[in-house]
Length: 83
Ligand SMILES: [Zn+2]
Image (cartoon, rainbow, N blue to C red; front, side, top):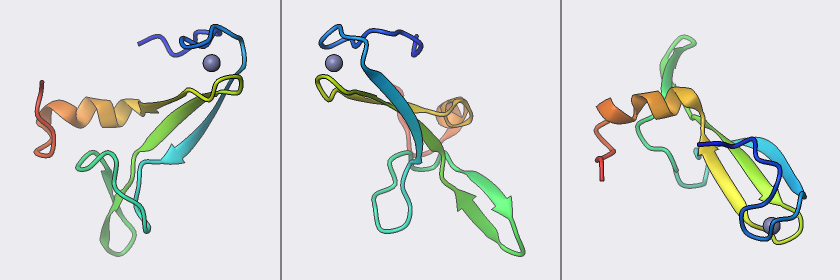
């Protein structure tokens, strides 16, 4: 998917901003279940995947893009079914 477009697909203006955020954990829902990577710091824990978030400052349209490593795990992940 082309995420480098400069114009908002909803309103067409060039007012796009981007950031990154964790895909859950803490007190919120896990939005990419089963796609985290395992890390070892004395114990096993799951590191939540990151989203790249793109927001249009003109109309508020918000898009989430899962990081490439999480996308690569989808075919083998038990939590996800191909549709
Ligand atoms: Zn827009």
